[in-house]
Length: 342
Ligand code: FES
Image (cartoon, rainbow, N blue to C red):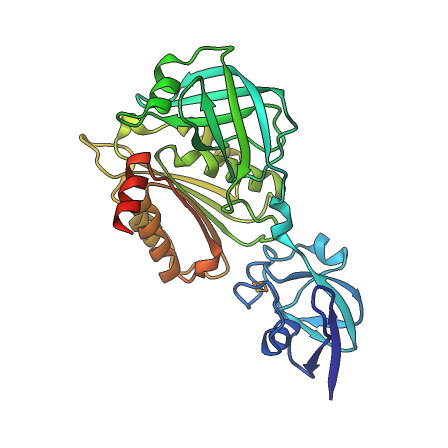
């Protein structure tokens, strides 16, 4: 005895035993079905029910809002069918299938954020529109210098493109951007690229971790997440070496003051003097602040060692590896070193 559930993305209907959940039955029968916590906390298994009766056991409002439920969405991990059903899971990965474009842009604004990080804003001259998902990056070419990958720091809906460019010792492109760039200069751009983009369908808690100029894609993700959902908890951790490396502090402090669901924590790893900020490593700060992060999703960008240690800590706290979307920033010299080691 049981019910037949048609999952539209799958070729065959699945049989769900009485009392079993749709997600559990799908996974048992080898049907691919997006999922995370399997306990109603993350929203990864969110699906649209086209027909049939189901009963949902309790779940977090972060995973499925009242409005979403009223519009016909369900959580497959909490849904037990009481009749044959027809449904489709939401396909979050479709979000980032934007065409790769080549654009000609013009420098519209330059702002020195720290001693070695500059904010560069571009207007699009031709080749647009530039559609991307928060967290993605583009290949950017200044003048005759080699192109480099930089993440967009702005919202996808903005009518300009913003990058945070850290000057790398000996780096031609980053030095040009930090020291020589002028308003009006032409810049070529190709993109978007990258898979560490914001997953809109996950509506559970969000942990965002940025180190140095890795704050750029994290800024875009956090601001998009705040715009989409004013309830789910969002925690931003920004790591820098010392006070002089901290930027956008008042911006994020203001956001935290204006959004009850948002917290901002700045952590210094190598302060030379007594500081008002927290000190230590980012992974230690996260570990001190949470007992469990089951059902959360994490986005990380920054130096490889920072990303690695934080992902390990997040997994120890209960986030699945698949729910850690990470971009480690390798310099060109580090990339060469990695090639040699292979
Ligand atoms: S897998 Fe269903 S809410 Fe997380």
